[in-house]
Image (cartoon, rainbow, N blue to C red):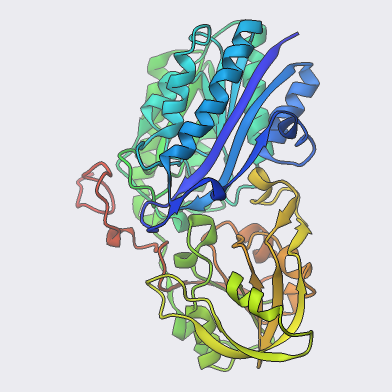
Length: 494
């Protein structure tokens, strides 16, 4: 029986958030807890589904799964490795056929700019693992490095943003592993990193440069002999590391020269469309002032600067202040504020109290103090309505946003949660007794990931410029390690 060792570490690191992420930022699964994820539609479930189909014996080690937040304390990475190493040693001693790593790809620690590459190097340095098949799956917003390409046989990165294909991406990576195990042919994994950095708002795959690049990649997979897969990695602009940004990789059993030429073709497409990867934004005041209720579905006011999925706190007050300023009726906004939720435990449903809401980040004007009526409260646990949701890839179908409360001030409904949650599934609102379709205008703390859930019910959508650490104007970010020169930070000739 084929034996496959599996481990994983998943984090998207925002170098400019000012925070440090410790163990509290990760959900840790060990041993049977990993294999118990079969059926939860996650990235891990994709691997497990192929393992089940192929009859592999899965040797589960440990997975650390985090979201997007500040630089990870290096102790977390070393502790993770201290758990993985003895289990891998034992598995190798008992006989092992392959290794699967479940990753995000944009992790940065206080001592390492490329933890995923370092992990692969440590795995490869284990006696007996030097030549084993090493296959990985990662996020479209990873930082893909040449080291990762050199050390892995194949990596498959999500092809959709919003990320509705985490399960499918893991299936593809595992099917490539199946091919390797059956044929014995080891592919080459070639990486090309471009001088382009796009903000998250420019990495949606439904249109723009990412759509053109994904289409080109699928064409090249068909046309280039021996090409097994090509990856389009949009990168993560908020990681201050040398290789952050747009990158590509080719997994091929064919000619290396032809694969390199295919990578250069993708790089040229990205360069020709580089300006399209920085979409324009609207003025918040102008959008809210011009708003008139009565449309078929809510108007979305999207504020990527407070993008929860990008590492922002999810409690910026700009949009709430605009709703108040223009006395908007039927408005809704979800915000993370554990203190406000805790304070609301002192009153009963239907009662009112005055409390400060949001505004924790230094770039924010500060909390907004409002008299609110308590409409409902819950433990914040719900099942995703969309089992292909952007959220399911790492978290699975059951979501925990902590103790939560819905409050109302005049015409504004505010969903408060103790833990921040990306607004990528309508179940976030519906589980709290609010129909999102009945809201007239909604503040969305995201960049792109909300689109699969919200755009089908929206009457219009405006991306607005607000304060917050996930600004789309990345020329304002104080990069220290990013390779230079590069677009859009520097003036470059074609």
